[in-house]
Length: 197
Image (cartoon, rainbow, N blue to C red):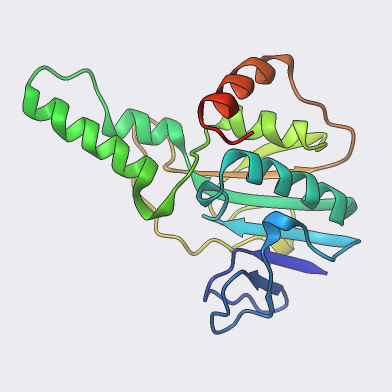
């Protein structure tokens, strides 16, 4: 079984396409932030979905994905890359006009399109390990060691900036991952300060 979560109207043949809204092409209407009734899943894919969830909901979803995946199952995620957003939208600029452009640009990236939380490699990797995934690797757009996970992305691409890709694509698998120690303190103050705990 292969799950495409947060599919919206983008139907993938051969996958169970899941969304909380009944778009055309959705196979199952389900709010995945409350869990899902699947087990022994081979692959889970979500493209430009996790950034629309509060961090706590995404972390819970990752734990649910780890539970539902079989031992050799793989989770593939595609999401905007916070490092690219920071580097391309906000520079230490000199003029007030440039400062205004930078401030609105980065806030648009954070809050535009319903975004709730943007990840960089370190944060996404640490969060997936905290959810129990033993291995987390970066992937290129459309590429994977697993034939079933190749060519899935359909989101538009922007040019790299300072060698940073605008999309962060990862695959996670295995069991037994644990949260790195450096995740605890920033996570605690983030959840406290954003009233998400």
